[in-house]
Amino acid sequence: MHARFKQAALFSVKLLLSIAVLVYIARGLDLQQLRTHLVSINPLLFILALALIFVQTFALNGRWELIMRALGVSLDWLAGWRILMISLWFNQVLPSSVGGDAVRMWLLRQRGVQWPEAVKGVAADRFTALIGLIVLMVAGLPVLMSRVSNQAAILAIGGLTLAGVAGTVVLLTLDRLPKRLIALPAIASFVRFGTLVRFLLLRSEHRGLLFGSALFIHLVTAAACYALARGVGAQLSVVDAAILIPPVVLLTAVPISISGWGVREGAMVACLGLAGVPSEEALSVSLLLGAVSVIVGLAGGVIWLASPERGSYSADKAAQAAEEPPGYGLAKAREVSSHP
Image (cartoon, rainbow, N blue to C red):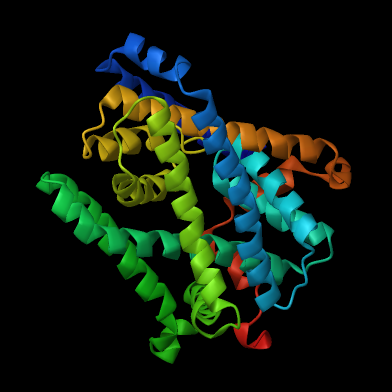
């Protein structure tokens, strides 16, 4: 009962935050103009954006399959894609994307994959995506500085980028700490995880393809946003989309709202505003991107309805997995050295 109350309270807080941010953004906008942008979207460009995000799921699954293979797990491509699509559905209906990841782990266990490999595979997939995002932000920062005169915005995005770089470096080098520190249970799990990611990106057989896919996937998101922006008549260049969408994606990934709603809209309005895109157009791009994500998620919902695992699914178990502290599952993982 306590766990369900905690889950309901968390969901309520995130829902209120999403609504509050959306209301705050809408207060200063011309809502009639916003409605006009949404209903007058070029249908062909909307379909293009939808196709890009759908095709992106194939690349996402390919990256995940490479990671699982490096862990010694043979994951059938079609089975992996089905699991990924189902997780995207749960991303829409659970309080955060962490819930979708918990479902991914649960479905892997149903296929006989051991818990340590399931946890490491999903967590490494997430962190590899984060590294790709940070690399794009680092690469785009000089371009951003040459195209944007707003110093406060440059400092904010630069600070966000620097924080991402620092966090990544710290995690990947935790095993360099004194042995008495890395032996502590609270740190040891993160040390093993950092060692795993470093192995995947630096020493695994498919490291080039793995890293390249991480960059490609985020560029596809930027391309979808560019298509939506052009579809509502926004004057957004390809270069601006490539350097301004990654910060939006990074902020949206922070699990403080329902599926990123509200946070994504605020970040999109702020970032695209740096390229001269009016707030109404920027907000319409974000809302349309959210609609695209919902449509792709609904496709995953259809797959879930036909899934043989649905009868044994436990929402309580998935919620419990989603609520575990970051190091909990990783603490159950075996040493990375067991998977050279």
